[in-house]
Length: 138
Image 1: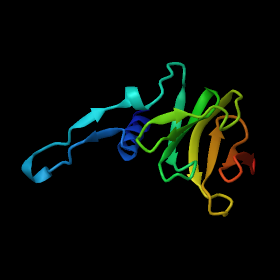
Image 2: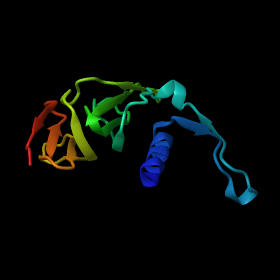
Image 3: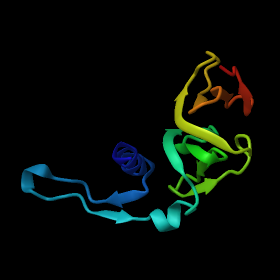
């Protein structure tokens, strides 16, 4: 859980969700952050997210977030370019999943990023962002 939290914090930095003043190590200054999670990330107390990956899912040049969810539909959060994430229901199947891992890569060699979702006890699925459909079940 700690590694997932650290990855999320670094991811939020990359998305611009945590903003602040640049650090100057030689002068002893530290970076000051403003936590904008409450205004930029949709909250869901029932969500059991186990893994997340950042990628440009919609091709707009901004990093979006795909989330592997245990006991619910996997989620895609689109970045509006200002660091605000919006949940996109139905981006993956709406069925209940038991996914623990998500990875992004061009698995089918078409030049467009794909997502690999790995459940604990069922078959894994690769989603092609080119067609927005599940392909190449493993």
